[in-house]
Image 1 (cartoon, rainbow over the protein chains, first blue to last red):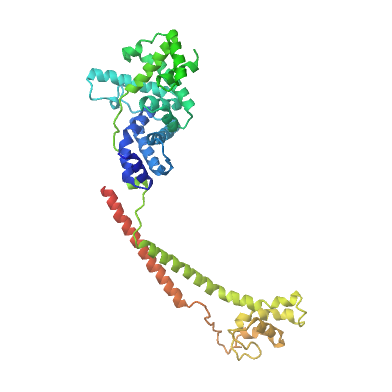
Image 2: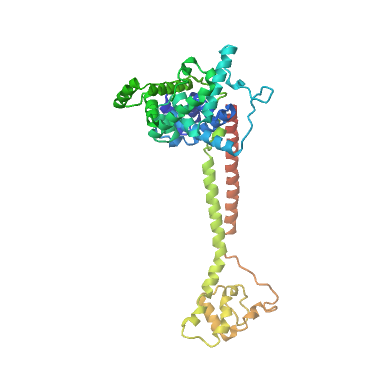
Length: 202
Length: 233
């Protein structure tokens, strides 16, 4: 894929070129939105919204990392979604166990390549991590999702969330600390290597 | 240990710390078990996040032309029809304006000498104030029959002529021209003096209608055709 050529064509209004870029980046954007929002439907909406606004504003892209630029659009779409959610809180339609509690392993987290037991454990761990992510302030969450889940370097993260490099470092350190504290509450789900320092003072 | 240390550890984990700070931190790590434990915690947290499975997008997020708000490209003939319609409309408006303003302009020119008396014109006859109505009626003079005795004899009086008329004592009964019976019971006929003939205006109107309709039809059909193609994709 000749990304610069596709971007150039898209900037001249060629929708087919832009759609080629959409197909290349849609998984990354969707995963980012999913980890920030924690809801598949809302993540899909935010992803679609991000691609729409990216096409409309593609002429404002002046080079650099296109991935970081796209991630900024999806982060903005997620912030909008979170603001909407704050104004109109909704009840999640996740399955419950029958006695009023939500099931720990809703179907949307399932990975078909694992045995039922492994899947159960993986689902629960993933759910625990998602729970801890959602407990982070949204600006910390966006940074940790970009750096640790999407594997962006600091410069790309700074470009994606439009904050200085020093702020990225600080937010990332705080986010990792808070995640560690939160995940220790799910120690029975964590791999052995993660539990080694569970009791050590920090 | 403070937060600055935690931040240094986090940056060190990502390999983003400069060599001199890295060396200093490594020596501290070797001697400080608490610092080492924190670094292991951070590494573990980061490792867990990196192990999170990447999910496939539940559907394709490609944009359709309709979603992107794209417009159908203009057909080649459309700009020509649009230009002709706009030009003809402009000419039509100008023609109406010219024809509509001409009588006012003529009346204004005819009335122009009248205020001269009151503006240091050297003083006219004492009857001047009574005579001004005749001046304001100058355009109507053209409509009066020439045989009306002692009233107005020219069809298109110039301002000076109007002034001359106003100075004649016989002008006083100017209303005679409008009095029933003074024209032998015949209504005054208005002459068509429009600078732009009515036929031209009709022709321009027809051009506007035909070219406007053609432009709209061309565009409408083109959009329908393009949208069908988009929907097929």
